[in-house]
Amino acid sequence: MDLNKFSAVALTDEVDFNNMPAQMGSYPDPPPPGGYRFEIPALSIANFEEREDKEDAKKKWLQVAFDQNAPLTIVQSKGDVQNGDPFQTRLSNQPRKRGKDDDAPRVSDLSYLAQALGATSRPANNRAWIEWLVAQKGKTFGADVEYSYFCNPNKNIYADDGAGGTQEVQQAGCGTRYYQKDVAKVDGVQPLRVACQCGASVRANANLQRFRS
Image 1 (cartoon, rainbow, N blue to C red):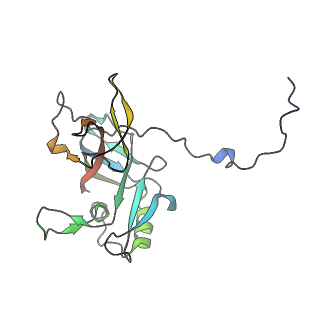
Image 2 (cartoon, helix red, strand yellow):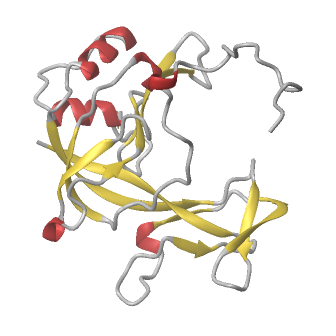
Image 3 (tube, rainbow, N blue to C red):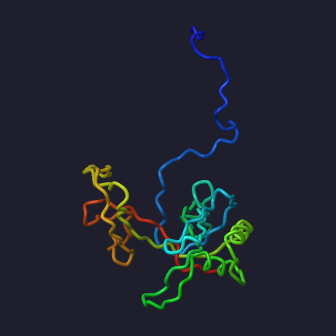
């Protein structure tokens, strides 16, 4: 085998071989809806992102990503079936309405998480939130997994391919949102996908609700 035509110059563009990040893969199916107990992972600055408020550019809300490199870990589940499984989600300190009335109180998911983890007050700013969240490594909390379904108008839809799978279609989503309470179970199980009114096959998003100690 003659290798002389190939370069022998050292290549240095890649990250150190022993520190390669995890490979990108398909987003894992979420666990079934219900109550779980989760453990907080080790978090780094890469897990945090600030986003501007849509109405007030001076405000920046913090979002923490429990992603594939730092997911929550399920430590207690019904029948222990999901114990040890990773759970990916995002939580924010941006308040949102907790009720249907116009004057319903506004509370963020991170505030409920802080309360569940025993905090006696809310961190004062995004830097304080990051420091507090990093310090929660190894602590556990309870919460309910609840599904929702969103036909994203900013992305092409995926439709049933007729062979038990889905295929991308050059058609934007319609923006319709479906909630778990509005979607019928199939053989007693909450479906991972629903058929949208526009023909899309919409995959469930797993959200955390009702945080508790």
